[in-house]
Amino acid sequence: MIASLNGILTYLETSFCIIECSGVGFKCAISSQTLGLMPKIGEKVKLYTYMSVKEDAIDLYGFSNMDELECFKLITSVSGVGPKIGIAILSTYKSEQVSAYIAANDAKALTSASGVGLKLAQRIILELKDKVAALPGSNSETVTNVGNAGASSNSKEAVAALVSLGYSQSDAALAVGKLSPDNSVENLIKEALKLLARQV
Image 1 (tube, rainbow, N blue to C red):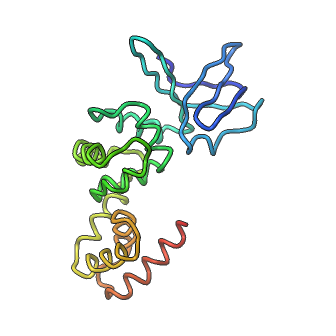
Image 2: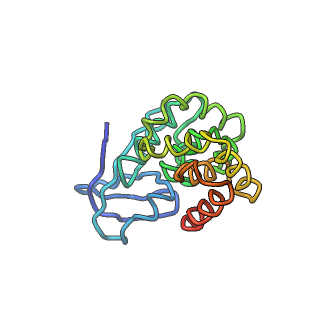
């Protein structure tokens, strides 16, 4: 089992890289998140890896940090979700966003990832709903904030209003959940819009 690679980046494309370690080049599939953190060709790099062994292939998947790796492993523990789907989801969203979408039952958001249909997204949520707290980046704050958004009628109305403005259910719930439910609906919407604007 290859748990990590620490060497020189010799090749880089949008979906994979090659890292040379002691004269051996290892090809790793990578997500867009990891791609954005890669150094220049010829520089040192460390990736945490997951090795997929099949009858006809042995593939390495590389991640810039342990949070992304652990999220990948949890996503691919779902029946019918292979490494390629795991990489596609993490190329679309950061691990903490995945946590928020699962906590908010937002299957539609997950379908933005390549190869993820509505039924598969619903299965991912169903199987990981009780494990969402174990997802890296889903510190209890993420899950709590989503839960807080449904704690009062004002919060629910604010979330509904934000959804009608085009925001996803989970993004709206996450933003509203950070605010005090004692606020008026108007204030919740106003402050949530400010929080959402900062994420753009």
